[in-house]
Image 1 (tube, rainbow, N blue to C red):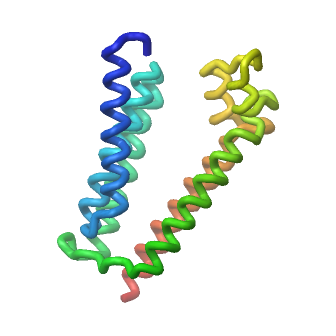
Image 2 (spheres, one colour):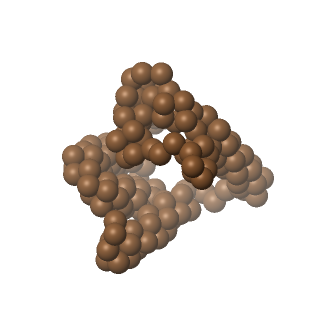
Image 3 (cartoon, rainbow, N blue to C red):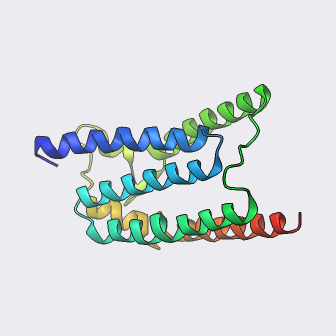
Amino acid sequence: MDSVGNIILYFVVAIAMVISAYLAVTTTKILRAATYLLFSLICTAIFYFQLGYQFLGAVQIAVYAGGIMVLFVFAIILTHKPNEKSAPLEAHRKFTGIAASVIGAVLLILALFKMPLVKGISLAQAFSYGGPQLTMHDIGTALVGSDKFQYLLPFEAVSVLLLACIIGGVVIARKK
């Protein structure tokens, strides 16, 4: 990411991702929310391509932007009327959601900087001056590895949990 064009592309895609993620959460039409989520997933694939991970970018588009979004859209069409608006949230639910989001973000940042990421090195130690250097290969291995302090098993557990939630939602909606 040395050239000015890559830096500009990064910021444009980052802004597009933030806007589409915000719109996916705040829109009242559920089919539009799925479309905004699709844009956010495509922006993630662009980041993978920009980092030189063509395989991960292709998987992101094929599996998430393609397969998972088709599954979401089918679930939405089978369980809701496509143009149906959801009811706006009450004020206390908005406050609870915002509070939970802020607490979750703080805990995530603390965990990210304090817990060991790669080879027992935390992100804070890697950022400190004179600390051990982490390469993209080390970080990639930590994210998709199955050894101690690697995250393949939790990632797969979350994907199975999401699949169970989608199936449960379809079953509950069918019983109405």
